[in-house]
Image 1 (cartoon, rainbow, N blue to C red):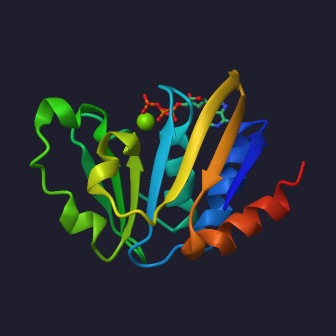
Image 2: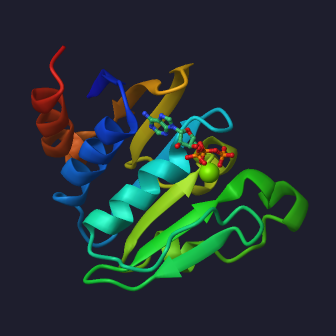
Length: 153
Ligand SMILES: Nc1ncnc2c1ncn2[C@@H]1O[C@H](COP(=O)(O)OP(=O)(O)OP(=O)(O)O)[C@@H](O)[C@H]1O
Ligand SMILES: [Mg+2]
């Protein structure tokens, strides 16, 4: 299932994160795509907040991975520089771990990922507007339908 929605402001991005946070489960994998500055980290910040994580979440670009403890742990990865650092980096423990994985620039490691992930791709429209495509197979149909329902435009 695939839907396209428009986010007119950061508030809309927060709303999207809130809906997804209400449907998180152990082992959930969220792949984030889209250009530099399109909103991947911003989305993840709101997701963490909505998952009850109070730590300040910032961009993990130079560390590839940051973990946050919550009712469900959040593993925030940014694989943009993985090529420089080396693919032998042990991400599998997290990707197949007990928490929720959010992977910025997931297309870079798509071959290492299971097929069944929730893919969210941001496109820059103007300073505050983003178009977002959300795609996932069966396991993610419920959350995608919920989003589609709230954002019908
Ligand atoms: N609707 C919106 N949704 C998300 N971010 C928005 C929105 N409108 C404006 N912004 C701004 O766009 C910027 C997005 O930056 P962010 O770091 O989240 O991008 P990114 O996709 O993670 O970039 P990178 O690829 O460098 O990691 C932030 O400064 C944010 O405040
Ligand atoms: Mg980022």
